[in-house]
Structure formats: structure tokens, C-alpha cells
Length: 628
Image 1 (cartoon, rainbow, N blue to C red):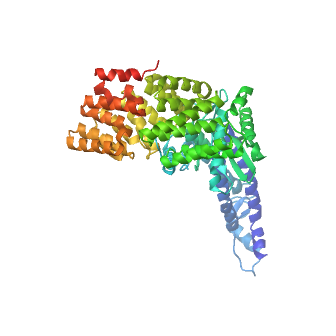
Image 2 (cartoon, rainbow, N blue to C red):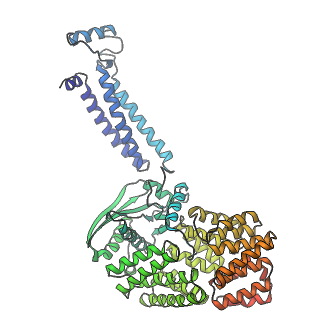
Image 3 (cartoon, helix red, strand yellow):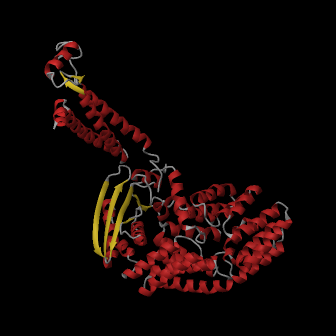
């Protein structure tokens, strides 16, 4: 009680109440100013923090000093026997009495408003400073088809690269959005595939809406563990809006919360929570997509709504298995990872034989296994199964872009059928030309088929959708390499490796460009760093031949043949061509054609085969890989 009375005598409660009122006014004014100046969402947090820190300071000052006649004078700690009022009166007399000195009743200035004014001014300065710095990073963030990335390393390296990246400088269009990874609130890390799948389904649904630009999956997922605010994420992805949310799954019930955030201001434009039985989860996806597009003043046309259901399933077990399979496939890992993805796609098909998207996933996975890991005999079996799965997907959903893209991919790699692949890829572009994955496959195909300009245009568009995807940068580097623009290929290949240092085949690509530029020592270092064994051996053989180390080159070629045989026959042809053995290189290429080596898809514009282009025996091979 004595403390309470002393605080009351010193006016602490009055000062605290005044501070809280003025702080509330400052927050109100700051909120309005932040909206007018379009300041980042974190600005108001900074202002609130400054006011919270100022409260104990002002309360402490009020305990040490007292307000009297407009002045803040020191409190006197008097013996209990001395009457307070006379002593305080004497103290005031010593300061000049009531009429003069520091401030009598007529001329004094109350310092409380001055202190609050200084605090207000300081808060506004913080607003403008934050505006100046808010466009950059606020702290550390976190997030061809046959390339491989070790999953944990890939996510970590991409997130680190995102943290070091600068915001997009191009104008941000008002109809652009990123779907950020949905939080898994189920308490079970094993359910992360479900929340990831929900975000991906929404991303695909929104991408089908005419006029809406949607950031692709890899770039959006780079912010999975980010500490950046939405304004920073929007600036880095170059989007005006972000859709974020959470999924809580318990038994047969799922709760999905989604919020549409305006990136520039950080203000919520729309939010909703859905509680549904799992059998209704597919309707939720379309419902959220429609709600978001309505909030963006766009119209989801009936034909677009029908497209959202194309190739889908109404079976929850099938949908779960498909999401797990796609999660595994997207890891671009070793053969065991692809086999795990295949098992999940097979489970999805077993639960719903009419699930077109699962058949497409099965087709791509089998083709990737055959192209990367199988010996020629086993590859023929897996390629045949891949083609059957792709044809089944197209039969079930002819207008499903992913099905047509899978068919093009399989025809390209399994049969080296460029004409058939071109037709399938063109159909995939008609219905999915804004999807980054569709664009990457289409762009790579056109580069390899000889239309570099068309391929680069598609890959540049994919880059605009998915600028943090190392596969896009690698594909662009490959396109410039094929065009013999080696100096332009280098920075794109280096960016792919910066985003994903473990990118299998990435160092081999880089070494090839350096070798073509005559930077032999750097090429040797790049080949030595390649994780893929055949790439390391082929690169070493070529660079040692360039260094006139015939013994080293022969040893590396011998190891390549011994370890991989016909599985790397195309790479053997590259080595022989670079070593000057033209007859041996052409013989290896004919052998590659006999076994159906997918490496032949690079033949038309492969700089490593340039020594062969004047040879008569090389021309039939070129004609074999022409469209039309």
C-alpha cells in the first residue's frame, strides 16, 4: 500500500495514463500514414515496439521527477517527520518561487507534451527509415527433367540463394500472385505432403484462370521457412498478392484456412476457413480458387472450373498417394527416390484406375528411370511401360496439359520420336502454357529439336514464372550453349549451381562451356566437382585430351566404357570427337542409335560433336533427328 500511495503522490499513474492515450493516438496516426505511403507491414510492428519500450522510460522519469506548475522537478525523499508540503514549498522557493525561475503559472511549459512529441517524431522517423530499408531483406529467408538434386540440400540451397537475392526490378502487375506453402498444423510431419499438395492444387487452379499470373512452385516453396514479411516475398517474386494458409488434418476431417495478402501493404484482402470431411477436399480447392479470383476482380469462367477437375479423382486414398508420389518425384533424387515415387503413383492408380494425372506421373517417372539408371535392355522395358501410361493418361483426359506433356516427354526419350513429341508438346502448351514445368519441357524439346529461338522464348517465360528454380536456369544455360553462345551460357549455369550446389550434371554443363571457351584449367576443376560419375569421367577424358595428356585421357575413357558400357555410349562419342577420332565417334553414335540412347537428342547442336559436322557419315544422323 505504501508503494501505491507513493506512486500516486508522485503522479506516476497520471503520467502512465497520459502516455497510453497519446501512444494510442500515435498508432492510429501511424496506421493511416503507413497506408498512404504504402509502407511495409512490418512498419507498424516497429512503431509499436518503440512505444512499448518508451513506456517504462516515461514511467521511470515520472517516479524520479514531479510535474509542478508546468515543470518537472526532482522529487525530494524527506524524513517521515518532515511535512511534505512545506519542504516542497521551500524547494520551489529555492528555484525562484511561483512567479519566475523555470516556469511559474504564467510562463511555464509542461514538458510531458514535449517528451511525447519527441517520441512521436521519433516514431515517424522510424516509419520513413523503415520505408527506405524495407524493400530489401529483413533477415534470413527460411525456400532438364533428368537432372538430379539431393532433396534436403536442394531446399536449403535454394532458400539460401533466395535470401541473398534482390527484389525483382520489373514492374509488378496487379494480376500476379504467389501461392506460398501452406503450414502443416496436423502435428504429424508425415502429413506435410497433404498441405504441400493443397497449395499445389490451388496453384494449378489459379494458373488456369485467364489473365492471372501465378508464380511457380519452386520459387514459391523457396520461402517455406522464411522469416521475411509478405512485402519482401512479393518484391522478390515480383507479385502483387500472396495466398498463404494452413491445413489441419485429423482423421476424416480437415480444416483449411487461407488468406489473400496484398504484398505491397501487407494488408489482408480476404480470408476464410473451411471445415470439411475429407471426401469434400476436392470441392474446397475449387472453392478457394474462385474466392481468390473474385477478390482479385477476375472471373473464373465455367470452362475454367471444368478444367480444374480435369484428370482429377474423387478418391481420397488415390489423391493422397498421388500427392506423395509427386512429392517424391519432385525431389529429383537417385533411383530409389524415383522408385518410391513410382510406387505411390501405382497406388493411386490402384485406388482409382481412371486417375489421369496419376497415369501421367507414372509415365514421367518410368521414363526418368529408364533414361538415367537402366541398362539398354531394361530401359526398353521401362520406356514401353512409360509410353503405355502416357497414352492411358491422354485417353482419360485428352485436354490435360500434364498428360500431353508426359506423352511428349516419353515419345522424345523412349522412341526418339521428335515429330510425335512435337505434336504432344504443342497440345500441352494449348492448355498449360503458363505452367513453368510445361514450359521447361517444351523449351528444352525445341532447343534439342533445332528451334533454339522458340526454345529460349519458352524458357524465358518459365523463368518469369519460376525464377528460383535451378532447372530453369540450367535449361537456359543449355539453350545458349547449344546456340554456341558459351559466354552467355556461363552465368546461367553458374546461377543454377548457386541455387542448387548439388545439381547433378550441373558441373558437367559448366565444364563444357568453359572447355569451349578455352578455359581448360577451370573446365578441369568443374569436371572434377561433378557428382555424376559418367560426367566426371567423360569430362576428365576430354579435358586431358585438350591438355595433350594422352595417358590420362585414355584412362578416363577406359573407365567410362568399363563402368557404363552402352549406357554412356553417347558420352563416349563426345570424348572420341574431342580427341580427334572422328571414325570412332561416328561409330559410337551409330551404336547409340541402335540402342536408343536418349543422348542423341542433343546431337543436332552439340558443340562437342562439331569436329564431325563436315563428315559425310554424320549427315544421315542429322537427318534422322529432324522434325517433319
